[in-house]
Amino acid sequence: MTMEQTWRWYGPGDPVTLSDIRQTGATGIVTALHEIPAGEVWPQEAIEARQRLIERGDSVAPAAPTGLRWSVVESVPVHEEIYTNGKECPLHLRNYQQTLRNLAACGIDTVCYNFMPVVDWTRTHLRHRVEDGSEALRFDAVSLAAFDIFLLKRPGAETSWSPPRVARARTCFNRMSEAEKADLQQSILAGLPGSRGRYDLAGFQAALDTYAHVDEKTFRRNLARFLAAVVPTAEEVGVRLAIHPDDPPCPLFGLPRIVSTEADLHELTSVVDSPANGITLCVGSLGARANNDLPGLVERLGHRINFIHLRSVKREGEGSFHEANHLEGDVDMAAVVRALLLEQRRRKAAGRMDTRMPWRPDHGHRMLDDLQKESNPGYTAIGRLRGMAEMRGLEMGIERSLPGD
Image (tube, rainbow, N blue to C red; front, side):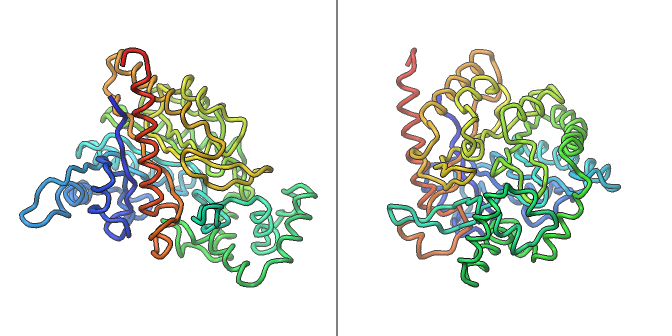
C-alpha cells in the first residue's frame, strides 16, 4: 500500500493545468477557493462546482471522469482577527466552523492551514541559480535583515538583529543596485501566490503594527483559542486539520513564530487532544532547522500527521538556505519516507481509517522548458514532476524492502 500522491493546483488560473496534472501520475488535487476572501464562509455550492471541475471539467465533451479528486484543502486561511483576538474574532471562528461543515458535506476531509501572521512562507530570492543551471527558491538571512532595517525601516529592526548581522546587512545593502533592491522587495512582499500585490512598504508596516502588543505568549494563547473552537467541529464532521509549520522556522519582522520545532508541535497537538488536531509534515520547512530530527519526529508524532509536503533544503548557515532537489540537500529523505511508511503500517494494523496519508512534492526548481515560462514561484510543472518521480521511486523501493513485503 502506497501513500496517496497529490499535486497542488492554484485553480483555473494556474499555468499548470488539470490536463497537465493528469500526466504526472498524481490522483489527488490539493487546492483552495482562493477567490474567497479570508474569513468568509466557503459556500457548499462553490465547493461542489470546484469538485466538478477537478473530477470532470477538463475532459472533452461528453464529460468523462478525469481520475482526479479534490483530496486536500490547502488552505482555509485564518483571518487576522483570529490571530490578534480582535473584536470580530468570534464571527470569524463561526465562519471557519461552517466552512469545515461545508467541506465535510462534500466529502473533503483534510484541511491544511497555517498560523503565520501577516506573511506566509517567505523567500528573499525567487530565481536563485544553482550549479546545474536550474533556479531555486532561496532564503538569505542577511538579505532579509537588509530589507528589514534599510528598506522597510521597521521601528526597532536594528536592535532585533545581532550587531554582526546588522553590519553584514549594511554591507549587503550598500552593494545592491536599485534593481536588486526592487527585486528583493518584490520577492518578500509580492512574489508568492496569494500575496501578490497585497502590500507596499507602508501597507506592510501597517500590518506589522497591528501585532505591536501580540507577543509569543499571547499568540500561543490565540492559537489555543482557535483550536478549542474549530477542532471539536472538525472531529464532529470527520475533518482532519493539519497545521503547516512556520516557513522559515524563525522569527520574522518581530512577529511571533510558534510552529517551528518539535516541541511546538507537541504543545499545539496537546492543547486539544484529538486526531482532528493534526499537523502537516513539511519536511522542507522543518528541515531548515538543523535541530529538528525529522525521522524521529515522524516516529514520535506520526499519529498526528494528516498531510505531508516532501522537499529538501540545503542549509547555508546562520538561518540561510536554498531549496535543493528532492533527494539532495540536508534532509535524509530516505529515513523520513521509511518512517512515514512504517507509520502507515501502524495505522493499518490499528484499523484506522486515515491510512492513505496524502503527500505532494513541495516546490521544485525552474528547469528545462519551465525556465521560459511564467509560473507561481516554487510551483513549476517540470521541477515538481522530477520531485514526484524521485519520491515515487524512493517510496516504492523502501516499501518493497520492509519486512513482510
